[in-house]
Structures are given as C-alpha cells and as structure tokens.
Image (cartoon, rainbow, N blue to C red; front, top):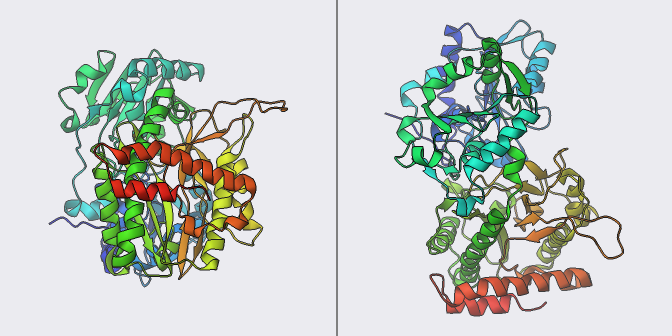
Length: 609
C-alpha cells in the first residue's frame, strides 16, 4: 500500500523512514547521504513522487535539505518555515538547522574524517555540488555519486507513481509568439553562445519554448520532460509517451521530433564531438557527467529560454492584465464577504480558503490555483508561508488581523495577491504597522530606475520606512511570475541577496513587503507589477523604467493611518483605488461575477481617503 504525505503529517511519519534509508546506506558502503528538496528537474514545487525530503523527514516546505549519517541526521529549512519544520519533523531523530545561516555546507564541514557521503547526481546542480564538495573536503571526507539512490530504494513500492498529466498546446493567442519563432530565436542565441545545441531540463523552459502546458508540477501547468534544441531551431523533445495527446505531434510539426524519455541517454551520447550549452544552475550534474563522458564539449551558460521567458511580450502582458482584472473581481467579492459575513460568523481558516477558491472558480476560467492558499488568522498570520492544516487551524477573532495570500492559474495569466484585513476595530498599533508596510509598498510601486538596475539594488527601497522604525521582514520583496506558468519564476527577483539579472521591460514581479509579530498577527501587502519601457522624465537626462500595477483589489482602509502618509502617498492610494473600481467594477455589475452588494461595497472601499 502506498504511503502519502501532506501538511498534516505528524513527526513520526518521517522518523520511521530514517532506519530504512540507513539500512540502504549500509548495503552500499556509505556513511551518509545528501537529500536535497529539489528533484530531477530542479523544481521548487514537486510532484509527490519526487518529494524525497518530505518522505524522509515529514517536512513539506518548498525549500530545504537533509543530511543522513549513520548515527545522526539533520534537516534544514529557512526562516519562512521555522515553525512548520518543528511541527512536522521529529527533533529526536533530526537536528533542525537553518538552511541559510551556514546551512548544509557548515554541517558537512563537521563530517567524520574519512566518511564517504553519497549523492544522487540527478538531484544536484553542479554549482551546488561544488560548494558541498569543498565543505566535505575540509572535513577530510569525500562525496561519492550513487548509481541507485538509497532513499529511492528504501521508498520502493510505497512510492507514488510519477505524474502523467496530458500535454496540450498553448495557443498563440495566449503566448504571443509561435513555437517555431521561439525555437529559431533561441537557436540563434545558442549559436551566438558558441554552441551547436542546448540541453533543456527546466519544465518552465519546455512549456514556454514549445508552447505547451501540462500538469505534472503541483499548481503549475508544466510538463516534466527534456529537450535538445539545435542551433538551427530543430529539436528533440523527450516525454513520457503516456502524456502525449493526439493533437501534440501536429502542433509541434516536423521540426520537432517526439521521443520517449527512455531515449534521452542515447540522445545525449549522440552529442559526442559537439558543443552543447547547458545551465549549471538549472540542470543536474548527471547531465554534465553524461555529456562529458560521451565526448561532448560542454558550454556552461544560463538556460537560453530563461530571460526571453521572463521578459513578457505585449500579448502576454495584456493577457496578464485581463487575468488580474478577472481575479480582482473574485478577490473583491471575497473581501466583501470577509468584511460582512465573516465579521459576524468568525469562520475558521479552512472555510476562508474555500470561500476564496469558490469566488475564483465562479470566474468560469480558473484552471487551478497558482499555489495553495495561505490564510493566517491572528498568530498564524505571523508565519509567512503558513497553510491552514491540522490542529493549527484557527477561527478569526475580533481585534486581530487576517492575512490571505492566494492566486489563480488562467490561460492568459498567473495571479498572486496578498491582502491583510482587520477583524473588528483595529488597534492603533496594527494601523501603524500596516501603514509602514504600505509606505514601503508604495515606494516600490512608484520607483523609477535606469536600464541595468537589478532587483537587489531596489530591495532597500521597500524596507526603508520599516528600517527607520527599527523593523524588517525576513523574506524577499519580490519574485518573478510566469505567464500561465510558475508563480515563482527567475532569473529576476527583488531581495537582499545579490542578483545580477537586470530588470527588463516586460518582466513581472511581485511587490510584497510585510511585518510579522510572532504570536500575534502578520501583515503583508502584495500586488504584481510589470516593468515598463524606459521613458524620459521631464527635466531628466536618462530614460527610466518603472512599474505598471497589474493587481487590482482594494486595501483595507480601516488599517491605513492617513495622517502618516505623505500627500504623494495618499494620492497614490486614491488613484489605485479609483483604477480598481474602474476596472473591477464592471465585472461585478454584469456577467458571471455579477454581485450587486459586492459592487456597492467596492465603491465604498475605493472612495478617496
């Protein structure tokens, strides 16, 4: 009987699997094993069949790692999951450590001298392995690739089947560019990089390049597969035959050869003598080992699809605009419900999640959520990545706050929005903190910046109001978002961590500063925005990029301390609310989302401050 796991897992789930893995280590003569969160495709969100870290430890966060040794083990998670990891992992079996501060490398530096630590080359990028290898060498130990992953061998029959969601065309009216044009364009980029072909392994790149969508990755319409793209634009696409629909061969055309996944090894070997581009940050070390073993000349470079995919074309941007207006109507209906019905009934977080999802489904165009909805009542809102599960579910309470973060997947765009709402009358302290977060949010929404600027350089702008008050938040300010693809998309981001990717016209990012008071409540304001074309500023000397707001849903006026806003900040809020009413209001007036009471509420919520 297969074992499954989710966020309700109790700590004994992972603990009972640890001895099974150690037995397999003994069989292979290993002293330890590296267990990353990532799978063979370096995914952030995983099919259950590939979530090895969750099976081993019970921890189901989207970032983490583990190390298993003969006599000890450790699990690593970042600041978003501090509470979750301690609730899901047996601290008697696993030492719980910080993923960022020291992380796995620091732990490996304390490995026993002479220890042999196994790793599965399909699960680690070469860049990651290089760092881990240095740490192990410092301890006088060694890393060893395994032919059979000891964890997979221990999981064996209990492991869920690999996903086999059908792969379907994503029409040009949504993509804005044919896959023929994309393949030719990216093929030229491969040639300019000095390569004859490129090996692509990222599901988002496969989906984008061939204008296809699937369902192998949770909450993301992406297929698991690989591709070899030649410099002339022809390609081989490797997919599980069970996922290939009747329409797919005709959609791809004669220039794309469909092959089963089992044919990939031989295809890589056939690249002998050719220059092959592959991304050392996105593709696993196994590909590099295979290509080098076959006699190919490896060109290490960024996935050639990454930046073109991130810089959306006009069709994708317009589609995203429409998806957000549609989603904004659903969210406005939800916010109206929170402000009326929920204020009296004080529902639990599960019901809150269900109501929001029902409003999104009522659009008639929702394909899926873009991630599992976060609904944090009171103290749970202080956990940035909290999900309402198990015995942690709380009802909302008067005098506290409700933080809801969710999004939808639509054929024309992906949404992600967070709103924080007062339950009952907010306190002066809650209004102060919300307004500080709002000031940072406005600063990021209105910033102008020259070409070549990175998100790393902008991050402090959103934090400045909080820093001046001696406050901060422990997550990034913004992540990239795909076009009916992943809700987290690189290479762009806005965060403290150094990122060298300049923000380019058409890139979509979130703007989500926050504040979290542990044990009490949390505040986050998130909208998506797209980088605009650089334009001159009157009296200026250089054209400047800016951001166009994509998300339209009202802010809770009760939480805004108007006196703490500058004249310009008040003007921004009024203009944003006026645009929200103008764009979302018509959908509440007629059509599938018509809701007269919600429309009346929206008019009041969007009135000038």
